Every structure is written in C-alpha cells, then in structure tokens.
Length: 274
Figure 1 (tube, one colour):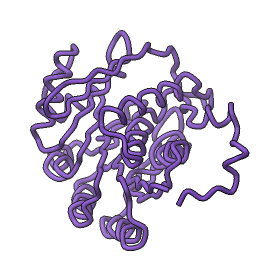
Figure 2 (figure 1 turned 90 degrees about the vertical axis):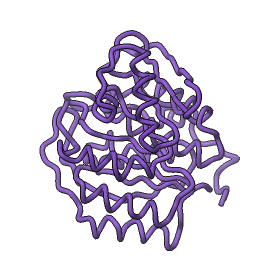
Figure 3 (figure 1 turned 90 degrees about the horizontal axis):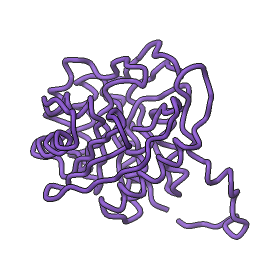
C-alpha cells in the first residue's frame, strides 16, 4: 500500500485540514499519516482560535514518520507562521520525498486569515521552492503572484509567474470565479484545462484540502500530473455534488459517497495490499 503524509492544521469540525486529508487518502486506498502544525478551533461557520505547534515539535513529527515508515508523497497544507514554514521546508530538503503537493492555505471558507500577513514572503522563499505542485485558488494565486486575476488569461499568467518562482507545476483553481468551475494546470511548458459545471451548494468546506490530497494520493499511486489532476477534479466534484448539510454554515463535502453507495467489496475483505 502506498503511503502519503499530510502536513497541515487540524480542523476539529472534521471537514477540512488534516481530517479532510486523511479521509481523502482513505477513499483513494493509500495509507495516510499526519504532522499537525496547528490546532484550529473552527466549525462550519467560523474560526474561533488557532494554536500553532512549535517548530521543534513539527520537525520531530516529520522525523518520526520518515525514520520508520517513509512516504510516497507529501501534501502540505496550512502553515500559519514563518517558523512553521521554515521547519517544514528544512525537513522536506532533508528527506527529499518524491512528490510534494502544496496547498497554500491562506483563508478559511468564511474568510478568516489562516496565514499571517507577514508570512507570505517566507512561504514564497522557503516552501514554494521545495514543492513540486502548488494548488492555489484565485485569491491565493493573486497574493503569491502579485497579480489581479479576472479572466482565464490572468489565471494562465499567474500560473506561469508562480511556476517561475521554483515549483514544477501549478494548478490555479477557479472556484472563486464566475461561470463553470475551471481549473488551469501549467506544467512548465503547456496549459491544461479541467472544466466542470459549477454545483449550486454552500457546502464546500474543505474542498481545497480534499483536491490537493487527492492529487498527492493519485501521484503516489503512479499517475502523472495530468492524470492526477483530472482524477482529483472528478473526485472533488463528486464530493461536492453529494456534500453534507452538517452544521449551520458551509457544510463539508462527502469524501466517502462512493463507498457508502456501493459498500465494501466482499472479495476485498481481509486482503493485504502491502
């Protein structure tokens, strides 16, 4: 079984962050592990508080995973402060995992900042260059690139600029745009487009976490970037289509809809794919 590590914040409401990542890994048939960098007290309506884990403890969690189990891919999510970013980047350079997918989480679904304002430069200098794939939404891509994005052409230009900062591939997500849900992938040479009909629902808590984790899982299993983004797009679209009206605000996506609909296959019971 392939192994995927998420380095991110914990969402006690279960819809985003570490919790969404581990659910996504499980849905894709990979073994999920986690390094918690922040504990976030949040629900579907608001963020109540954030407590960051020390840089030393972040580093020790990464060491614990790599000295014993290792990882076929790493997904990096919420990193609030420069100290966390520097600790994670140092460990990525030390262990050199084959695949690093980074979701530059800057805001919660309700708009609450999850990355300190003064930490963006540190993210660009430390985390972005150790990332293979970056998956910003439009506000995050604007912040990183320093560009205003109002069209598909702007998404392309921002992706090209972000790629030049040191990562290999960039997926600019169009969830905040008007019209269909168009994501644009730039692989350093060409642009690829992943378009689906926009689903009319407010229950989209954790979609960015889910999408990036699905890419990491697919690439751990041997898919190339183009295949992985396409499969991740299909998965997150399914999860949004069958999202859950849980809580008073933006409910979570349904990570296990296919499993709940089809159930476990009897022939797979007790099977060991290790």
